[in-house]
Amino acid sequence: MSNPSLLILAGDGIGPEVMAEVKKIIGWFGKKRGIAFDVSEDLVGGCAYDVHGVPLADTTMAKAQAVDAVLLGAVGGPNYDKLDFSLKPERGLLRLRKEMDLYANLRPAQCFDALADFSSLKREVVAGLDVMIVRELTSGVYFGEPKEITDLGGGQKRAVDTQVYETYEIERIADVAFDLARKRSNLVHSAEKRNVMKTGVLWKEVVSQVHEREFKDVTLEHQLADSGGMQLVRNPKQFDVIVTDNLFGDLLSDIAAMLTGSLGMLASASLGEADPKTKKRKALYEPVHGSAPDIAGKGVANPIAMIASFGMALRYSFDLGAEADAIDTAIAKVLDKGLRTGDIMSAGCKQVSTAEMGSAILAELETILG
Ligand code: IPM
Ligand code: MG
Image 1 (tube, protein in one colour):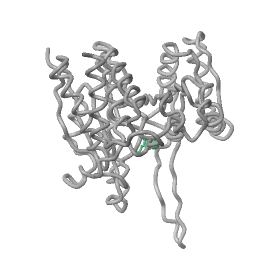
Image 2 (cartoon, helix red, strand yellow):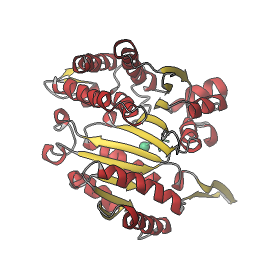
Image 3 (tube, rainbow, N blue to C red):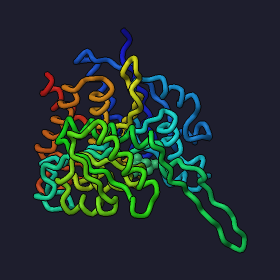
Image 4 (cartoon, rainbow, N blue to C red):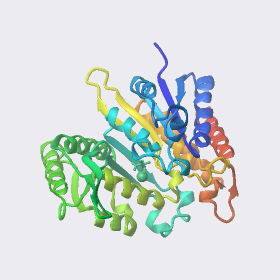
C-alpha cells in the first residue's frame, strides 16, 4: 500500500513559518512512528501569483484534487492589495474550497485552561469552553451570482453580492452538524437571519426538516445570527455545535477564536462529501488565522493553530485519533509549562519563538507517544 498523501500549501505571510513546525512533526511521525506521508509542496495565494500570475495554478488545483489531504498555511498580504479582484490571493483559497466542494468547515474553539486568564472575557466565562462551529463553505454570499460592481454614471456605482442557498446545500451541512453533535453534547444551535433574509427562512425550514427526519434525539435551537454573536460573548458555554452559513460562520468563528485567547489558537478542517466506496472525503486543513503580514518573517508567530490543524487531518482524513489526541495533549502541556508566543504572552510566562514553540510541542509529543 502506498503512503497517505499530503499536499502542503504554506502560502503567504506567516504561513511558511507556522508550516515549518508542522513539517517537523510530519518528519518525526515518519522516522519514529512508522507513519510516513508522501508530502508534496506547492504555491497558493500571493506567492503563486508572483510565479504564475494567478493565485492558484491549474496544476496545483489538480494536485489538490488528487491527494488525501491538503494542508494550507495562509494567504494574502499588502503587496497584493491593488491586484484585480479575480487575482487576489484569497481567490486561490476560495477556488480550492469550491472546486474540491469542501462544503463542511469545522472550526473547534476550545479554551485551554492555561489560557483562560488570557481571554478578553473573564476566566469563569471561558474556562473549559468547547464549541464547534460548523460553517457552510462553498455557497452563500461568497459565491452567489451576480457578484459585480456596475458603473451607473454620474459618479455612482452599484455593487451586488448575492446570498443564495439551495435545499441540498443546507441539508448536507445540517447533517454534518447533527452527526457531530451526537458525538459531543447532543446540542445544535442553527444561526441565520430569517427575520430579514429569504435564505434565512429556507435555512431554518430545511434544518428543522433534517432534524425531524433523522436527528430527533439531538436538541435543536434556532438563533438569529446577530443574537448568536451576542450570546457567544455573553455565555459561550451554552453552545455545543453551531451550524451556520458561509458569511455568518466567518464572523462567528473569529469571535469564537478570541474566546480561546488568540486567533493563533484556532484550527479548522474543510471537508467534502464522503466517497460512497472508499468513505474518504476530500479535505483541506488550515488555521483560522490569516497571513499576519505585520509579524511575518520575524519568527514570532504562534504555530499552534497550524499544528492543531494537522491534528485534525490525522483525525478526520487518516483515522489516527490517538495521534491527534496526543497532539492536543502536547499543546496543552506546553501551555501548562508556561511557554507562550507573543500573541498569548502574559506575566510570569516564558516568551518563545515560533520554532521554539514547535519544538516544545514535538518534545511533548515524543514523551506522550514514546
Ligand atoms: C477564513 C478567512 C477567509 C474567508 C478569507 C481569507 C478568504 O477569513 O477562512 O475565515 O473569508 O473565508
Ligand atoms: Mg475569516
